[in-house]
Each structure stands twice: as structure tokens, then as C-alpha cells.
Length: 291
Image (cartoon, rainbow, N blue to C red; front, side, top):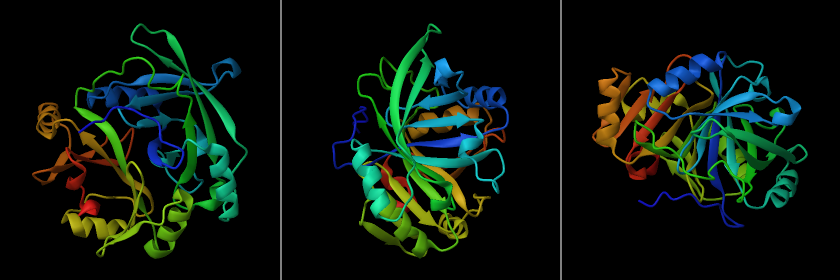
């Protein structure tokens, strides 16, 4: 499977990243390193005294960890997976479409990141974002992002992660009413290709990755395992491993908490300092919402 990084075309929409909000960034970073991730500390808007965050940069997509309360709903606990971001190559057009679709996008904003390279030097990375108001989505803080191709988080070489994880794929959103929420998220994603997944809920197919809209109890039943503690919000996400056997061996050697669902799929429980769980497969067909 070719997982080489490339930006979306004008009509494509990709899953870009999810955001964890944590209480102790240093503790979360130490645990993530223990879990086999190579982390990069970044500073948003360095010249303006910005806020420190951590990125796990994958071949496709990334995972963000921050203490910023901007991503946190008042009724959510920390740590929490609180935000989802989709990537577009047409941010201004997306802002206009969202407005016409009944959403309330905030003004476009420039984000300047300063990530550290292997030598500890800061490298500038630019992005633009279009965020929704929190009132638009009850479950997650949602936004669109455009990465400057010349100065992106993927410039230069990216380290291979010790756990063999290499790509972000799907975001699983727990809701109270899957039918209502699926319609809302399909308008947000500008994708009408909804697929009913039995009793689980709905899958919104993007050009890279999926949005899975369901009730957590339905996913637990489908997997024949009580794995999800949250009932609403971003309850999980999926990643691809270049070798599931190597991934399983790494976690077992570290005595970390994983659950085998079947031969091609495991669930990793992230440490308490980070929160959430991650479905890991070697192929996208391993994930239950793709069958």
C-alpha cells in the first residue's frame, strides 16, 4: 500500500488530524514515547508567545496533543479526544459552502507552527484553518485545514515509529441520534456517499479515510467487546500499521494494554494521561465499518 504523503486535489477531502486535550503535556509526551511514537514538540505562533503542543506526524495525517482549552467543550473531561480536522485544497470555497449549508464558520486564520527536527532546531510550518463555532457540533470541535505545500509539517524526513503505525484513517464519532448526526456530518464533509452499516450506524466516505457515526454501544456489540467508555464525542479513531505482527509484538513486549478483536484487528487503549482508544489494522478492510 502506497502511503506517500500528497495533498488533496481541489475536490478531495481527507481526514487530516484529531486533537487530544490533556492536563499534563509532559506526562502525555513521556507515555506516547513509551507507546512507540516519535513525537515532535511544536509551538503555535512562536513570535506571539504561542502555546506548546505535541504532534505525532504520520506518513498520512497526524495526531495532535495540546493543553489548549480552545478545543474543549465545557461539559467534556480531560483528557479527551475533542477535535477533528479535515484537509482541503480549497479553504475559501469550503468556508462559503459551510455558510450556505447552515454552519457558522469563523474567519479564516493562519497558523504558524515551529516543529523541532532531529537536531532540536525549529522548522517553520504554515497552515490555514477554517473552524466552526462550537455550537455547530455537539460532539466534536470541527475544522478544516490547508497545509502550505512548501512549508508543511511533512517537510524533510519523518521518523518511523517504533510501533510500526504509519497512517491516520478513520474518525469514530459517538452520537445520541446516528441518523440525524450522519446527515449533519455529511453536509460538513460535503459528501453524500453515506453507507448504512447494519445496526452500527453510518459511514461517510471521504477521499482518504471515513467519518463513522454511531452509538458506542452499537460498536461494542458489533465487536463483541466492551471497549468504549465514552458515549458521545470522538470515541475512537483508526490507524494503519505497516506490519500488524510487528505492532502487536512491540506492545506485548512493552506489556501495554491491547485487545485482539480478530486476526487482522487490534484495539490499543491509550494511557490515561492521553485518553481514548485506537483501532489498528494493516489493511482498511480490517475495520468493521468497511465491511
